[in-house]
Length: 188
View 1 (cartoon, rainbow, N blue to C red):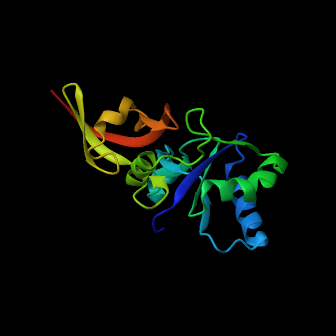
View 2: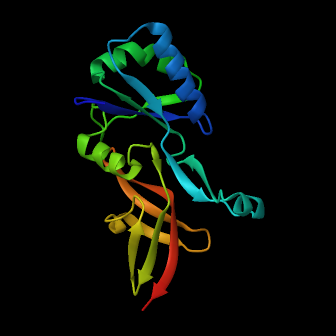
View 3: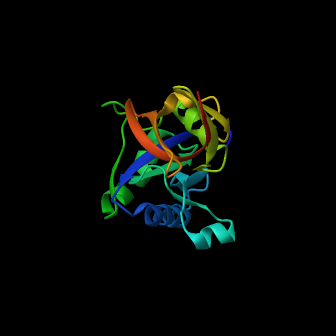
């Protein structure tokens, strides 16, 4: 999408993310608001799936919600238009709790620098793919994947489950997300 565009974030009930994405798409299509680009999505993350069947099929990684209970909307619709067009839908939906606001202000769009950090992790796919790295002493070195050069966001790793918890800035606070990270070697 070309600039200017924004990401709005909706807080939704547990396990309702995909339903809200579909409902938003239907509402937008039915409303005829085609002056604006509009794409609701639920960011995902790969995770290691341990089973003999998955290993034999070569599908050891599956996808899950990166931020459970959050739905993102990418659009070139300004904040005031978004609120005006979707406030009735948000209030009437049993699955949407609220539209998130930035740091107690009236701003609902994710700041551009935060959005850019997420886009770097997603690599245009709306999913954080698995990364591969190694441990050198007390440091983690990522060899490939979306965490290359972002080792500082890793707060802890779980080598057994091939995962890492990363800390990301979002709406003036810090959120944790679990992503796939395979550690192939530990050196001293």
